[in-house]
Length: 345
Image 1 (cartoon, rainbow, N blue to C red):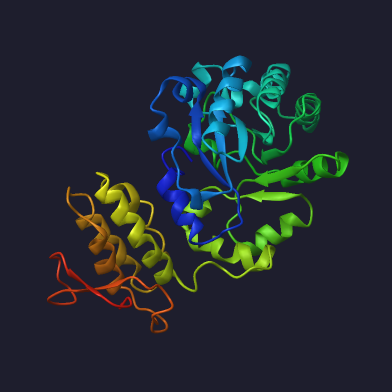
Image 2: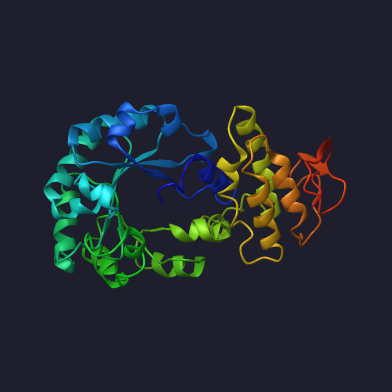
């Protein structure tokens, strides 16, 4: 999920679920220690609970990056041992570390000593020729002894040579049975499953066998799937009644971001698939794609795009007590003017 799960996407996700744990993009230890921390690590308090995902293989550097993450308020530190990209391989971390479980254990031990929040590991079921169930079980056993709090298992192996990162997300077959077997044989461990999960029914099926489910690409391509999480799995109402309310809840956030010098496109690019599968989705995407990138574009572009998507029920002042936008004609591409009142779509 590189270049996907940034702070703006996570804020959008919080309009869909209050309870699901969110993750940052994988950040290298060097970036965290030496980079622009406000840019890399800053996040809105509404994003809690949120985990910082780290990439690296130096236990001392990982411990320092973990401490920095906790100082910035992250609720969990996650070590990525599943990314198969060439850049990650060249640094001998990511999925390449599955061949070095003792090194991973050393890193987990160092991070556990440095922070009091959970330290977790995301990994594959195997890499290259190290792909038997027994190989994964050995990896997990060694890392578990170091105190790993949860194992997030992508149920595909990774080919470090011969497949691109994109192909590694789809070509190797899913082996859910291996993850189920791990959960059955190690009931004392927290086992989370990841890979190819696209809807709440699938989540429920997996949760009958494992402790948690991780959603990756589906959360980005069809984000509304997460609207079912809170009512179905936590017994709590969804944060928003419909997709329009989600988009409306983003408007004040967008205004703050733009007022602080940010660009609308930083946020709106994550919102393009909000109406995936709905009538008006093409008009929504087209309006944002055309009007959001230029400098100076603001929340009014999202309001205009919303006007082009039918709403199944009329909004009330309680739905989203923000503002309406008016413009010359429904198909106008000029910037609308704001006036006080409940949202109108």
